[in-house]
Length: 237
Image: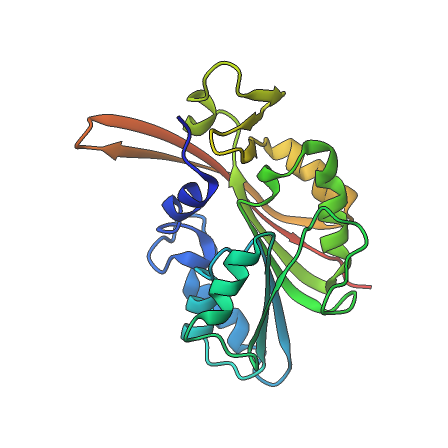
């Protein structure tokens, strides 16, 4: 049976962009992020993490980056997750604001104005959304980026091990599945993502497939993972 989305997200922490200081293979590594942020010391630098969970990205970034002008917004559909973020010992309202938000909703109050964000982080979130709603979600998120702002994306790629392991009856539509816990997951191609981001008027800087072989020595299992990682930029006016 497929693991929950939270477990899958945790499984990827070791190599994922903002969550790794060791992986230099096609990743948004932590030193690069800190360098990018540090260059903004004299100006405000605002980040939004969508689907922040319990803060496994937010707090490491705040802890390792001393830029006093860095401010991170983080949202999640789960009110329980946001409560955990706010109860964390490192939660500082001067540097971070966590809020509950359904990114598929079209008319929700947002705590920041249009074109106010320097970076949006979208990690294993879009795949959980019904395919017919994905374009609207990305287009709305793009509207909050400043000209020149960046959207960082990573999610499941087509024919990832997780897709191949689904049993009969779990497929909702083409490449879209439901897990045993009721959460859903879509498996992307590069071209699909290129189309989605292009229609949101973002310019492609990176769109790559990251293939990994993970070995469970105890169970003598080989697991072939496929993820897609992207960087898209909002053009300058």
